Image 1 (tube, one colour):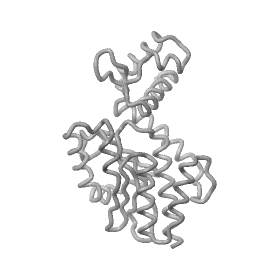
Image 2: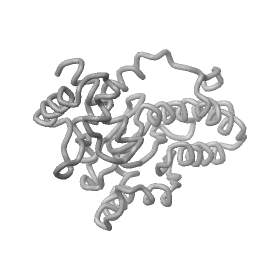
Image 3: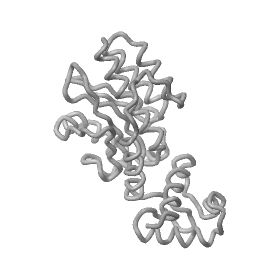
Image 4: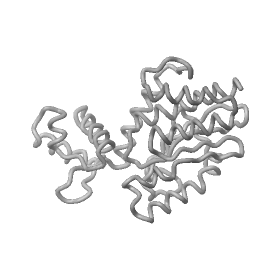
Length: 243
């Protein structure tokens, strides 16, 4: 894949996340200051490689799970190369600062965890969840199912199946990267649910396997959401150990 093709793919992913409609060559031509014909040729190559698809004739393109995976891998590399920030370090992003303020204001572990989950729901529009010890915190069903991806009842059922099994699956698999992202069909349960699980493991005095994250459509702002989830985990570590 050439650098231009990679940039076009990433632009399609980010435009689609924002607009929820297939991205056409005219939009991309404006972004890259080149002709629509040049963009169409590159889109054909990306489609042949399996990174984008055309949902119906005469539409623009949307990312496939493979396209999202390439994009997310790049974001994960950037996150892993960042120096680990303390939860109280000043952040340039206002939403991250708001998240820190809310969590740090809590003096009880259960309040801190619930606040972290509820804040992720509010800031991302996804379903938020956390598991610590034998407890599972979950919030945001209304926002998740209001997304256009979940008009079909079968997709809602697939999401429900995934959530029914999320806790035992996490205990078995124990993802341990700074950020773990399971995209669409990569999910071991509910493969047809068209969702991505973005989750971070954090250290806790209550459990060796504590997680916080969100569940949302594959069409989302991974850069922003992954950063928020990672920082929520770091902030919970600080609050729970200082309790």
